[in-house]
Length: 187
Image (cartoon, rainbow, N blue to C red; front, top):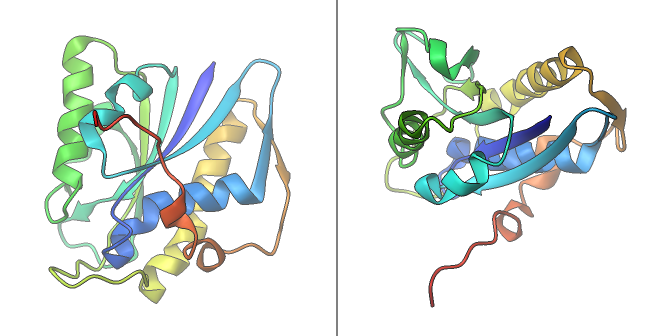
């Protein structure tokens, strides 16, 4: 089985970069082993529909993103299957969330959507200003999100080797911008 850990978000808007930052942390911190499964990690940034041909190549997706939750607080973490999104989860409020929801819905309509587990956190939405710095609440939440993702992988038989125990999300945020999906922009 081919498993994709896909980080979604805009690193220019603080907390909304949690997906790419956490994907990069996981890639640098862990090695995944399995005879039956292959794990790949991609920083999908804000590419949305351009990720369709990538997403459809996999048998299972672990998607890291921001979510909005009625009555929730910044830093609250939620994990759910895409086909069972709880009613209290909304996708409004960021530059990328609606597009990612629409992307998944389009793939689903085509009949090509693999099972998707979403691991999301409520961000502090900063509006028009940009910053590479995440709030303390979301930095702390990243540890919970990391555990949820690792538990999900262990649950399907993936062995996990720690390459660097001391590595934290704040150690990788300064290099996230140089990583990500390489794609043809048609130029």
